[in-house]
Image (cartoon, rainbow, N blue to C red):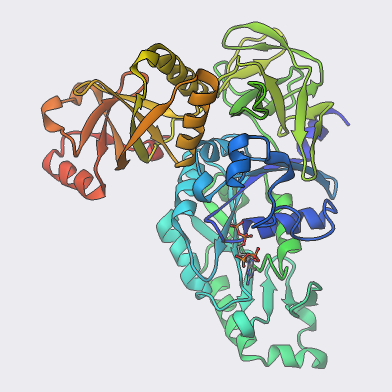
Length: 522
Ligand code: G4P
């Protein structure tokens, strides 16, 4: 296959959801569909096990969770699929956000009994910021849930994106009868078992299907469907690819019901790797020279060494094991001898990879998050990864003042690597750390001790709402303990508001001061 063919068959995506919406169950079913696993429950036994590929880090073992945004890669129906995991719960971190910079689209799973939940909103905002196409799967239709129209309206209002239901459910919970498949023009019956029975619309008149057609759930859904056809939005693939409309699927990951149809339709619509912005303009994925960028660094896989694995998204050309590349930031040559590509069963060595693929490369401590690796004569770097707004803030000090030098060195390196964000408060001459999730603090503490031999003290200053200031609008007298004025790594001033209420109050009082929300920045 030539380079363009290799690119065309790749689908690289993340599944985003709030914990317990069914991400693991759906992922398992996708792996099963592609014959990667024979039995469900292999991906993550909730209480007993975890991802085979992710129990690298000591801290991970202790907590029994997956710190990493693990990557799965497998063939399916002529395509090459890359699924990037976006960890939730207590392992939610900046890595979760950064993973979204390495995908071409996302699948958003929403529990139909609950509707949109907080974590989904946060991840969605990042997708919107980056114009990533979003496909929605409403899960758990086998349980009594909320009305489909209500769910669609919620998506449109809360997330501000157009919807187009690809299928429409008839009943739910005990009355769940199946879905109208709008694209294939068939009614797919739900029998409570894995086998789905599609009935083409034209055959629904037949006597043998009268039990279906006469069911009140069917009747009701047929009327709703008519309404949708008349008053609903029309489907636009362009709008989907621009992240302005989301195709919506209803189903059950557990049953499973509607999963195969969803996946096949999704894959046919989802974008292959495309142009990526760089300092020298957009780089096409079929450019002959290899290039890629690092979106995540996993440290201390092996506590005996200080090994790190850098996760690299290939953006162009062909990666071959042992090839020589240049680190664009320093222009230094590096030989990529060790590389891993992560699959469902175990991490193994990858010999070649193309745009869209994710590889793990050995990092002797030379990479930073956002680094570009290139071959060929051109000099360019991919766009810098965005800074994501942290929510949890803690004051950090060294327990032993004698260790100040090591303390500063450790913080500086970990911050540079992207493990955590650092802020400085002039007023009290104190360092404040900012993170998206609690786990980042655990990792920070652990690494400061293990790699820099410094015990740190972390004093929480609570959840805060950060807003950046325009540099010509900084008036130090306006801020105090409640609304703290701090500087970020680049020296830009921002305010850590105590809560949303304090933020609104400040805005009302000082309407001329512009407060910048990183989530809203394009
Ligand atoms: P997550 O990765 O998004 O956190 O969710 P996960 O797949 O682990 O699913 C959370 C719970 O929801 C699990 O039940 C799972 O079996 C259930 N679930 C997922 N999809 C469906 C569905 O389509 N219908 C129904 N009724 N339930 C579904 P659990 O009891 O919390 O865990 P487990 O003991 O079954 O693993």
